[in-house]
Length: 167
Image (tube, rainbow, N blue to C red; front, side, top):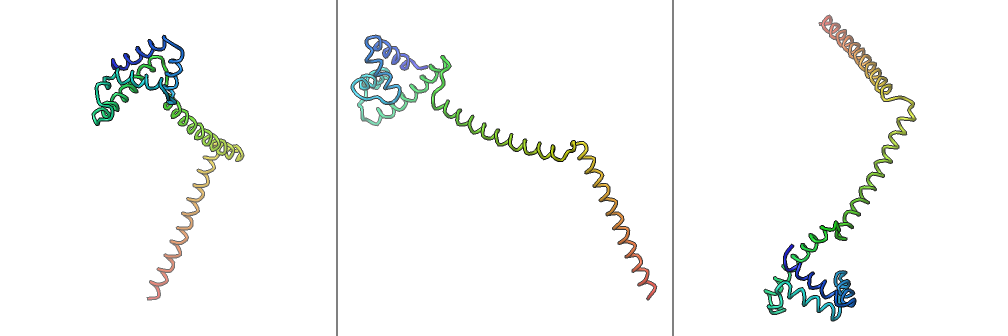
């Protein structure tokens, strides 16, 4: 965590000790619904903590440094909150969406598994029996194919011998 972050929160907490109204201002500022004089005080405190008060407010250098300070502040805030095992709302909502999508996938897969189990159950055969029957069927088909090829071969041989004799 950077030292400006700690200075900002140190000053903010000291200011909170001075009155409940500032606690409400800080709460609004943290939730992003800030407005009014209290917000201006917090922004001034932020600018002072990060050394931005020495620069011209609307200058190009100020905007770059303000953006850099904001990123540093956000990173430090995440690190600080992680010390208390607090997860940012955006991260939690992203994980919730991912969890919901995975639950939907699991439900679909369970339906498919149920249908496949139902097919197996309605056939009345165990997988071993079904495999044995398939093997027997394949053996029968092989024998029939061999018989057919033998018959065709004999017919071809007969035609050849008839042609040879007729010459």
